[in-house]
Image 1 (tube, rainbow, N blue to C red):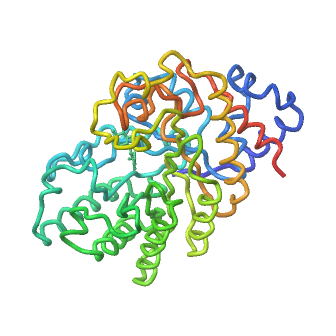
Image 2: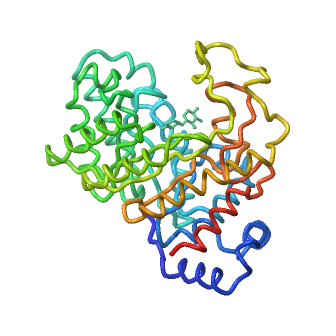
Length: 380
Ligand code: XIL
C-alpha cells in the first residue's frame, strides 16, 4: 500500500526544475543521471504515473525494463498476471506466484498498486465462459472475488472490479455474465469487492470511453451502483489512442462528465499506435492476414523523425489536457514500459514493429518523454 511522500517528491522536482539545467537538457539528464527527476516525480503533485508490468519484469527477464519502472513510475498495473485465466485457470486451482511477486514489487517500491481485473469477459477460462446456470456462475464470481481480492486485502490500492462491460453504443456487452445474470451482476460484484476489501478503491474500466454513446453507458453503470448504495470510486479510461484520434474535446467531455457523477477519473492504459489500423481500411477484417505486409508494418527498422515528433506532439497535447483536469485525474498509466514489450507489436496484427510508449527499444527516453518533462516544468 502506497504511502506517498508528496512533499519529498515535490521538493525534488522543484529543486531540479528551479535550479537545474534548462529544460532543453532535461531528457539527456534524465537518461544519464541516476538522481535526475523522473516523470513520476515531476507529476507527483498532480497524479500518479503508472505502467503495466508483465511476467518479464517480474521474473527478471527484462531487467532493463524493471530499472526504468523503478526509476520513472509511481504506480503499477498487472498487464496479465492477475487475469482470471492466469490466476484461477481451473476452478479452485489458483496460481499465485506471479501475482504475489507483482504485489511485492509494488510494496517494495512504495507504488500505488492497481489490481486488474476481477471481472472481464476476456482472458476468462472456458469453465466460466461456458456456464449457463445462474447459481453456478454467481458462485464462481463470488469465490473468485473472495479469493483474489481477499488474498491482497490491504495491499491493492484500487481494483478494476469490472472491465469492458459495454458495447460501443453504450448498451451492455453480451458477456456470459450479462447473458446469464443480467445487469444485477454489476451491482453484485462491486458490492462483494467492497465487502472483501473495504479500503481498496473500486473502478469501472473500459476503452473508447471518450465516445459519447459509450460515455453514457459508463455513467449509467456509475449511477446504477450509486443508486444501489454500492461504492464506485473511479472510472478508468483505457486510452489506447492513435496519432490523430480521438479528438481532445471528446476526451475532455468524458472526463468532465465522469467527474460530474462524483467519481475520480483515471487514464489507465495509455499508448499511441503509430501504425495503420486495419479497421480503417475499407472491407478489411482484422482476421485477414496482414502479417508480413509492408503496408501495414511501415517502420520495421526505426521510426522516422517526422513521426517521432508527431508522437511527442500528441503526448504533449494529451498531457496538457490531463494537467488542465488534474483535480479529477488521480493516475495516468501507460500500457507498458518500453516499445519492445508493448502489446501493440502483436495486436491487432501479429509481428509488427510499433512505437507507442515513452521509452524506445534501447531503453532510452524518447522525444515524447522530454516533452512531458518540459511540460511539467512549465506548468502554472
Ligand atoms: C492485453 C495485454 O496487454 C496483452 O498482453 C494480452 O495478450 C491481452 O490483453 N484492455 C485491457 C487489457 O483491459 O487487459 C488488455 O491487455 C488490453 C485491452
